[in-house]
Amino acid sequence: MNNETRRSKIYSYFYGAGTVFQQFLIAVGIMFIILGPVAEQASYAKVERVREEYNELSDQADAFEDEYREIYYDNYNKLNVDMGEEATVTQNDRFANEKNAYNKALKEYKEADEKATKAYEDYENMRYSDSAGEVLLPLFGAVIIIAGVIWSIKKKISFNSKSCEQAYDEEIMIKVSEARTKALTKLNIVAEQIDKVEPVILHGIAEYDPSANKNPIGRLAALFQGILKLFSLVDVILIGAVGAAIYAGIAMMFAEMGLFIVAVIGAFVISAVIGLKLYKKYEKESYVSPKKIKKLEKMYPTLLFRFGSDDRIRVSLPAITVYMFGEEQLYMYYQYFDVVTGKIFCEGIQEYFYEDIVAVTSSQETKKVFKRTGFLRLFIKAIDYLKESITVVSSGCQHSESYIVPMGYSLLDTSFVGMRNLIRQKKSGNE
Image 1 (tube, rainbow, N blue to C red):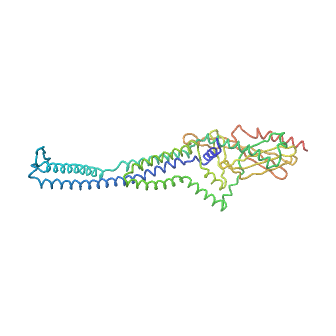
Image 2 (image 1 turned 180 degrees about the vertical axis):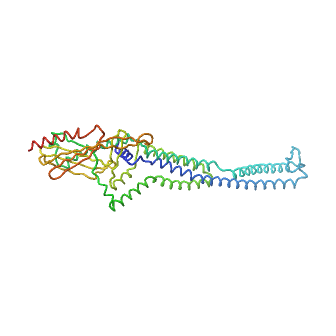
Image 3 (image 1 turned 120 degrees about the vertical axis):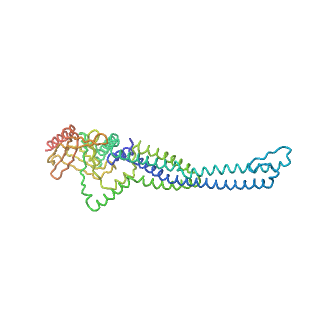
């Protein structure tokens, strides 16, 4: 799993899955709803074109009628036929030219009259009927919007938590490995000084003081963060709505030219091409735009808890503590970071001479938490957890870390036991 995908999955785990594709669907629905009135305008323009065609054909028919009538009245004593009927022409007829001219004019008039009559019927049929686009396009748009809204709600309520948990655990392991390397640099020691005893690395919950958000600057930042978050919920819809309005204007020009169907086909093709790309990026790859994560880096860190499918608690602000054991000193490096952004917002080092260590204390208490589970997370499940804390106390200072672990996975009974015994041995050996 690459870093970008892992980061986006972790973001989704704590802040809800991204809904860019669903917002795009809603924007597409808005576009097709807007195309409904455009279809009505296109239908009106078509009716006007048919009416103009009818008027033109009617004028042609009148002209041909005048022509054949004029020929008839000039030659009625030669034609020997009732007006409107075709004159018979024989090979030896001495009035053949007049009859041919009359028949030609009569034929042209009848053809023009038929065309004008057909155009009038088309005009009357279009005049009092709605086009399919006026009804189907808004209906199609409404269906897409409803699908996008329902899909968005479903993603916010239940997302692919197992893959997100996997990404979270993978990120923690990466950070643990980096912390071990960084500890050597920060403490300015070499591996040979501590390689006799394997370092103990624990990760828990960051000691985070949310009171920073209570001062005026913090409140302003929190308000700004809330506005950004609100905008992020509909930013694609807003941008898409503007794009839909622009496309509707283009479709209107096509409608005036009688090419509205081209605009409709274009809308389907453009929506399909962009939609497939967004689906692959934001659904298949669970992609969250780096801009969203960058915004979090500018805000105060937020401590969030998530109850995993494996009943483990995962936090957005983990702490990693590295304990390294030298011949005479206990070295400690700790860092608090935002797992979503990967940004370290607090870190420090402490060194204790074994002879100065007053105590290594621990506490453990059982906590009951309630986890939403089942279909759409509508059910409640009670789970017991262990909340443990470890404190190293010296004559001058102390450092504490808290951990939340499932029942049966106590750190006090595993990693902490060996560390405490080692410190006790080192302390007694240096006294």
